[in-house]
Length: 120
Image (cartoon, rainbow, N blue to C red; front, top):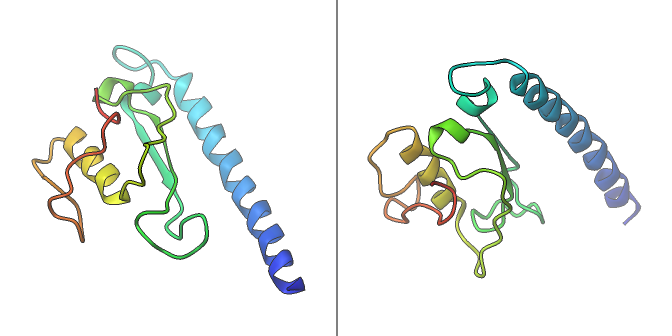
């Protein structure tokens, strides 16, 4: 449909705008010394889209970007692409565990466990 092509283009423009803002903030945080590293090393930027790649809102079709957090127990400098689809709840569980919460899951999956490879 002609309308959907326009909507997709508008979404890309919107997404690129926010991506540039997130990148700007990450670069700025990386320039500020803090403790054993930079402010970015002591901050976790957690960016994702809750609608998934095909806008179906399934927790199994979402892409997230974690930026920073090197001094917080996160394994940095990697791109994770599990062999099988993983629930976003596993990523959320990993983040909660890094922040010190003793939890085995998140939300609709209270026992899903963490996502392998996110934490050191």
